[in-house]
Image 1 (cartoon, helix red, strand yellow):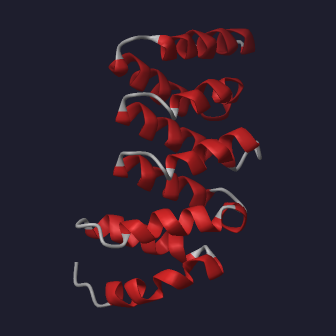
Image 2 (cartoon, helix red, strand yellow):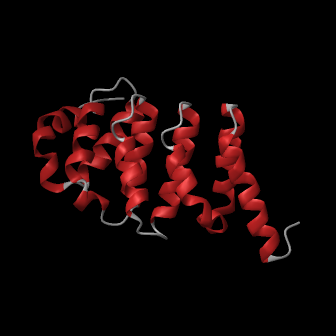
Image 3 (cartoon, one colour):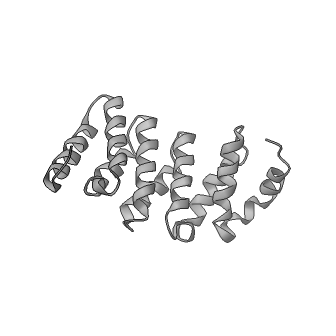
Length: 161
């Protein structure tokens, strides 16, 4: 379908233009298509960074997930900053996506350990066992920043769910 580099470039910019749609489903689909393009969508990463502030939760989650994949290819401050900002999102699913994303980024646990630990620590008491497990994994990467949460982690070890 896309045979030439020029075709690919035109295609990803065409898709990225859909990020401006008023319809959240169109924006969500556009981010999903860009995620499917992998490294071919890298020229559009800054547009995706902006989508981490979208009013729609699913657009934000999908944008954070795309940036997580790109984080290993690019050591851009804007990507890491967007992922760290996701830790303060009002929606818990965006926060957990941010934690998962930062676990995939080399060195994020060193430079953003306190922010990761604060977010993960707050999720240790979540009703969903998978969320608690994700939070514990993230805390495990933060070193000394996890010390205030040791008691909660010990309690979590006794958790059957």
